[in-house]
Image 1 (cartoon, rainbow, N blue to C red):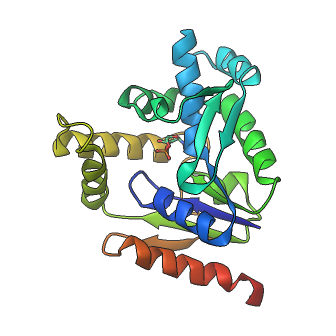
Image 2: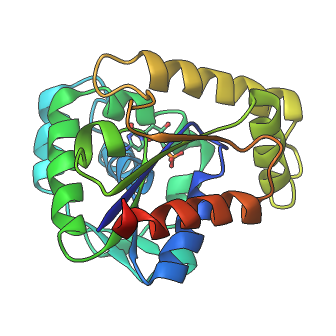
Length: 221
Ligand code: DC
């Protein structure tokens, strides 16, 4: 069984995906981490981020793996633990070079499908329900007002990055929204068969319970 969760940055999808995976005993597939991992490697190797052929070859010779489950998920590139490094702003700001290349996306999709074939999976990203898992048993699209998403990100960053400003966080989210929704390849869109949840005024537990109810009803539909 596959649960597909898509949505913009700060919509709450990672938190709730981990919670659902834990509750259901499913694997948690963080596909954003995979694009982050390849961006990390390309930057380490000094590969030109505009060069699609070089990025495709890089992907072909790179091993991206996960270890652990839900909140203990760790990401490895060629055996090197990159879980923390791939969250750095320098990576986040450059992912769009990687994620808009059709050849890279094709390879990522194949790998994501292969990983999900190992067992029941909660898959989270931008194109889970629309491209990667069109036959997922349940599809969700999580959203929230941009101010609320920026507030959540700011609260997350502030304790470890004292110098962070709310105005910068909201600007970054606006830029990512624009890049994610306007790229030619697999842009972030709500699929017609996805259940839309606006999380702006909901607690994470409320979102979790709504989704769990929908998932538990799969057998009865
Ligand atoms: O979910 P995240 O913030 O870790 O994702 C980082 C970036 O990766 C996001 O801005 C767009 C890209 N991404 C993508 O293009 N397709 C996915 N399925 C997941 C992420």
